[in-house]
Length: 181
View 1 (cartoon, rainbow, N blue to C red):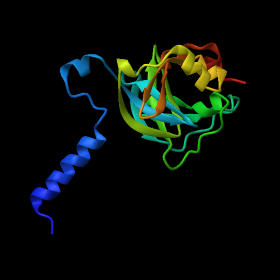
View 2 (cartoon, rainbow, N blue to C red):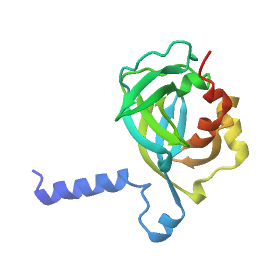
View 3 (cartoon, rainbow, N blue to C red):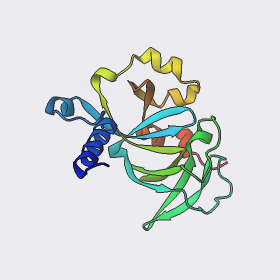
View 4 (cartoon, one colour):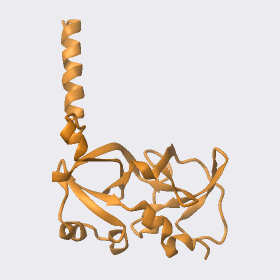
């Protein structure tokens, strides 16, 4: 039979093992970049915390006729109208299911407010400078050339390549802005 002390010890061990990538020392904090980790098809993608306004489950949106196939619709988020964009469809790597673990990350830049539909939000990610990978490795690992152009840098962590996605570049790209057919 476990004592209360044993249970607390087990919880402590579990939380320490799951929080292995959370910086604890002052020097680690200074050399760490924090982001929101998402899954987009087979890619692990990180989006700067400062770019994300809100994360919600996908909810039914209103269809917008005459728009590109990657536009899922329009929705009202606390009085703000936002287009919902299927990022997988936009990059030509499939279509995101709108149920289960899929989520919408709402981002804002220079007056543009949109929701980016992704397969899954993995959670907050912390990357150390020493985990940064060379530019060549990024492009040899990303099959979609169009997606490659939106990757600023990447990190290798726990045997996974995490691509750092440039939201500002996406929201200012002419192709993205031309949603009408």
